[in-house]
Length: 287
Image (cartoon, rainbow, N blue to C red; front, side, top):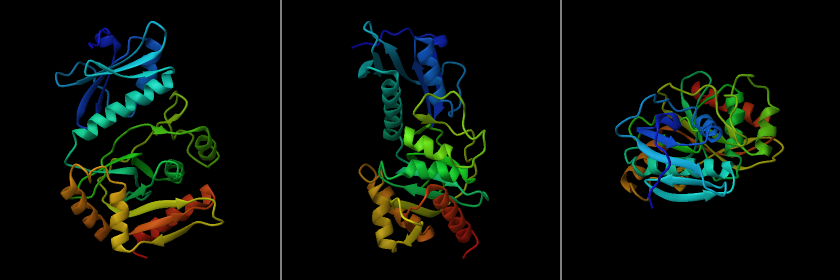
């Protein structure tokens, strides 16, 4: 099946996503604006690149959305929101399939407010990882990435990956209630997304790993993990273990040797973010 959507410069959203040049062909102007906004954190490419990977998001005759990759229709959606999710999923999946020199983890990476070290927040979907990450941003941390961590296996420095955060209405209400810089996000992003206005750019090695376990405790609590448990836990959230096991095992061992790993039992959101900020500052000062 061939993608016959028009391929003109005016209809393409072009971005540099990780090491790849990506073009998304979107014939409809309103749909194209939505794609532009959720990919707005990635550097813009003005002109067509010879090595770019091309995708397409378009409406069919019935008004439904189709997503095309490599000339093949891979997803159909009844709403633009679902079409955008399919676009993101495919672009990121293709990127990860071509990235075999980085340690991939499911979680968020942030630079601490002092710009001295970086912190990982690892967890399954639904545990409150994104909500906690946004609360830490409100407390002065700067994000490298949410959901997809690409870690240099030698330096243990996370790559900045400017993907928009996925936020539901509950998360949005919780984080909007926190004290934060009014300019902390890019305006005009579709419902269900949060695009930080500022990203971490410093080359800061990981010095702490936080694993949220539960919420709704009366007060937040951090429990240190033994090295063996920490390594096993980190590998649980690794996307590299299956296709690059030697890299994954080596990097997890190096990570646990230099960055303590903690289970987090969270309390109220603002209190938990402040508690973690103080704990990270204590680590920075060697306490």
